[in-house]
Image (cartoon, rainbow, N blue to C red):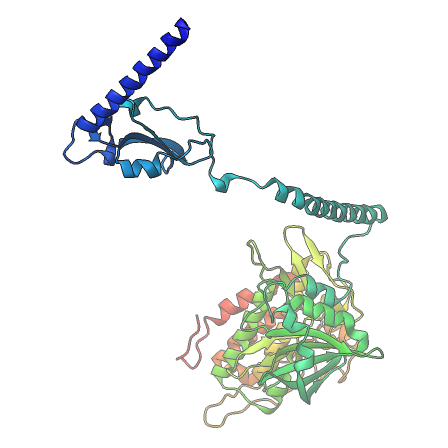
Length: 502
């Protein structure tokens, strides 16, 4: 009984002390620690007085500089009304912001402790594991497909190596050649080349030879020339297109190439070569009906020499041009342009030379050149086919004969101008369609050359041109003029003492 009396007495004293403290607070107020915006404006010593509650809040705030969450505490005073609302909040770990209040002593909010916050990461950094698990089967399927493709290609390459066959057939058809590359950029884009035959409106036949026909056609409102090859001349068509697509082949005095195509049905095939159209036609036809003055003579001869020089010259560079020999130069294979210049055409027999490898690219072809214009070394079969210079010198022999045809049509004599009738070289010593033996006998055995008319001796221009052609058709290939030397020699010729091309 005595012990229970003692415990009861102690409880009465504790209640009394609490009552007195509450009474003291109600009379003088409770002093609380404050910080930041929670301090009243008239308090500068970090304390505030209230008749309500002291509080402490703790909040996790995202730090932009450190890229992480940081704890931020606030201390201050609540009124009785604020305390009734805020101080009843529970302190839980999952809350972003927690509030705790006290009234048991002055500055009691300094000692308030909170449970530790769990680490919180930026939501953008979290990865949804379920989404990864859903994507795994698709990733596996994609990797499996890539592996199968790799194995298929590897096995295909292995089979080709075992059979000793190249993966890309070389020069099977011109279609294959065109599909692989456009060459130098000569002509139209390849997609257009493969469809141009369907867009042509062919009208008139403007020429016909042993190996094909030339037609006038319209394409996209422009006139073009369409050369059609006979069925047996596929090699000539293939070779000519291949030469036209040589890198850096384009030149003012080379016939402009547009496209090549094949069209036909299952029973027949037509091979087409589309080029620029020149209404004056070939030099042969032009000289047959026109005479020349000194200026037009010079322009024609100069442009022919320029075109041949471009063919014969090798251009070095990342995408250089191989040297090319024509092998069938004649007046019918030279076209006259509207501006009076000429353009070299018909490359069905041309050969290419690569100086780096030393290879001479002679395409297989049953076609032969024009016998009337063949050089002596070709007629007697002494041409050195392993030397590209020999092919170039054979070209220059033919150039000399063409210059002779041109000069015959140049007027001289002042007021009473005269010019010879047009004639082919050796028209007076061989038949109209000579065979090899006819030409060999005249050129190699009798060593005949075209006759130089006496009137040329009285004309400075024709006299100078006659010296050039004589050196071009010399019997010894080693002493013939090159195309560049012909151009340089012609640059020294005065035309009527007024015009001089340098």
